[in-house]
Image (cartoon, helix red, strand yellow):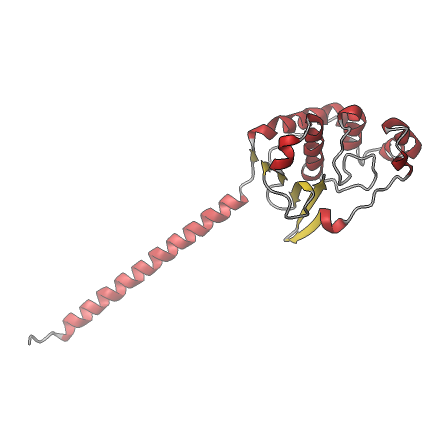
Length: 219
């Protein structure tokens, strides 16, 4: 049996220990690098969209200048088709507001059978949340009520003014006069005798924590 010198053992152990340290730092560096990349990708802002939804966003931008007096350039938004029924069974659209990138999800099943008027009303409503930072309104004559508007094209001029002029001088006097609104929207609809609609806030608005709020629109 050959004798192994102590110095040889020490050298071998030293090399092994050194290699272990190097591998340890290399692995930690890779992990750190991956974490940084994940963080940066999650924080990256920009405009991300499903192609079928883009024309409605562009029309929103165009109308912002016509009805609001100032063109709104949308540079940070994600708008895609995705299931929305996790918020409530009747939810067809949601806006996540408060994160790095405002995000809109549109229920694919609804979109497939919706009319152009219903599609545009839904997209403009969600953009009212995510871009204009507007909350739900209980007035049944508002595009920002939490229920889908089915007569959007019939009263498009009114709804667009109501959307883009909200909060500006004269808005309350112009758009929240009950008698004028009832006459404008539908004289024969007895439901309009009551201005406010009943809404269950738990079904349409949720605080997800971290400053993020989700607004839902129901069918």
